[in-house]
Image (cartoon, rainbow, N blue to C red; front, side, top):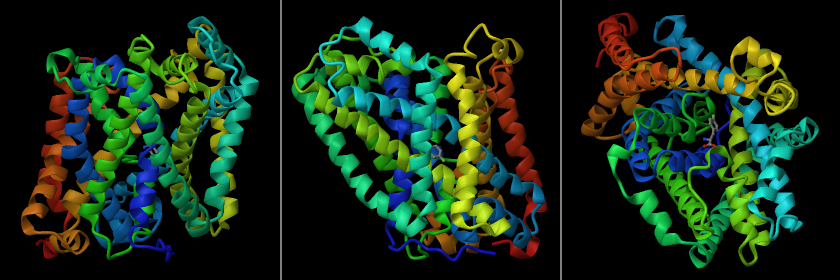
Length: 481
Ligand code: PFF
């Protein structure tokens, strides 16, 4: 059964996809990765990947959704049938659904930290606090499975309620209020950062490029981040794409999503580093940048409690608009495949992901380093789940690029893209060769056991070569352009 749902307006897909893309990845992960990797050079590689790999795959993923008008799993089943391609391509849908399920489980736990800090900021408990107190507060939060579970539960229920209300009344209506408010808040925080922080230092940190500063690991992290931030390879964009109006332009929309997402990351980076440098703190704090360094900066500044509270509301809103896009692909599949009602499907996804999230909760306390879980798996459950998604996400992106690049015919792509022959050729070259090679590189390097840089390069060449040769098996000769 196909989903006949279509967004209410031509532009709603853009709103929904931006909602999905802009999230903890922009406000939490991007600034701390940039801080750890020396600033400008990291951003340069990140931006290059967004434009050369991210946008082409974003177009491809949306195209697969819109062409099939089904949830990612059922959509890929439909497309493989109509293209007489191997059923193995259905793995795109399954990989996406599994990644969405895994990511939601830890995304919700981390977003829960923002509930804690919103509360702490607005009640003024951190005003005037010193570094030690704030650091100890964060450690105490992580050490409490009860508190973490409470916040995780609240966050995931809120996300589930929105998706449960349907794509129009739930997702569309909430995004229509949330997204503009988020942009306003972001600008308020930036203005505050300019007034109270050191915007000059932030700008020179972010925009001074010295490629020699960037380690190979940093290159890979930059590429991985560009996938995460655009929500690629997880079925989220495909699921939203299935509801996209046939009139909306794929290319222009994809470029707009990438531009807005990148702009939000840059503005967030500027605002955060301006405050951090203004308070005389260092940029390389890792994941604690937002939850320790930033509260410290707010603690020392005028009206810090209020603006800090508003900032963490921004973080929460951005996280919710992303987490709903993780629920949608799985919920839509359960509705299509098993005829569940939407609330039943959402409940199933949310309860299962919530339960898995408890493993992430325990990773910071009862099963932290030195416990049995570590001994058995060599890392915490959170790290294990993140590692899995780091493998699934690029793998999904790689397969999407290959399927869209090789299996879809010229006329099908042109029907979706409605662009000039020249742009079509550029896009197809990028999804056929550049994106798969880049992703294969990131993918193989994200497996810690795969040491050495020769293997990924060879792997990429082999994969691309194999598909170039295997093209005949994918596309019926009669469908050739
Ligand atoms: N793009 C989101 C962020 O930057 O926070 C994270 C995300 C959401 C990834 C949805 C994947 C996804 F399907």
